[in-house]
Length: 466
Image: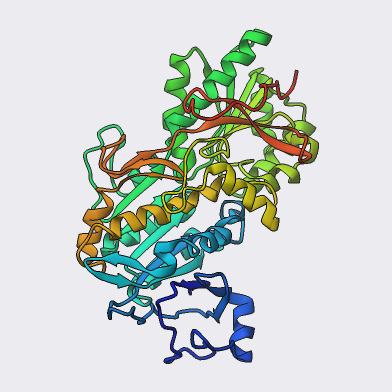
């Protein structure tokens, strides 16, 4: 079920029993190319087209000049479906990673050089498929490590499989509470230490603490009633936010008007909107799937629910989702964990966040996307593999990922610090707001950096509705 395979220059790519796959130096067969049209393509470290990939191909058996068997890393992420915005920069990230010296030339471990193969698996935004892909990657494709990114719908199913099947996994873009609860940990008493899994991102508490400073500024301007309408779905994120948001907001002087937990995919939000209007809520927050928010917000505007400030999570994180709402997105605020003005650099090349964003845009991929920071999954993977004696010993690699402490493109990643829970590194968010731009019709302006002062403010916070 691998959709894309990238190999370092040192790996071999013999045909074996994989029908339609060409050798490293060969050309793509007609049959293989037809299969690739539905499954994706594979790339060399130098960016050239390597081979067509089909469902169920196995991990590389290639070896480097020292006879070292290839290290296989599988990345499970949503490239299509409702969560595709999260995976939009991921193919570009792989191309960048395969240009770096370690991934292009192989990992140097214990006097040997190990070629590296990256296998990309598209979840199609399905939690069930994410878990199935993880099991396939581990039991059939022979991965030495998994990476997983982008929301609990992707990451949690992969984490469950990795932990139960004993395979090292580094995760990103999932609120840590949801990730931890899924692994049977208690965020209020975080004593459980997952053996095979670590993650970097933020938590639900960081999002509410990102939103409150923006609420305070709008309250000071408009003397609001401090009532927050909250629409949380009945899913992993919604349940975590429902537990975390209200007490923190209450301590800051805000009252939550909570809707009933609704199923993902709901198409009629009229009763919820009526509830919020009756409460005269001046603020709005939620954590829905992106298509659900588009429906919910359009109905809110049509039915006259116009909060002074909307601060949403999990949605409007990326330009395509913002443009899809047209003028309805103006001055809606959200969070982001990565912006070009942060001072972080690639641990491989020294390229800055701004340089990465500029290259992403100049190469024809549209406006920068915060998940360019997924680059750091591979930085953490390299750091772990580089510290072991045998990269194919999953227990040794699992111990190593818990000791990773690096400065990366996503920021400082220290899985050994204990974080809010074992195996968790926090990358704090900033508040952004979609406003009319100069270079682009819409731009994500950084309007609050309370939790991440290193991010440069690029715009003034405006009311969503005045």
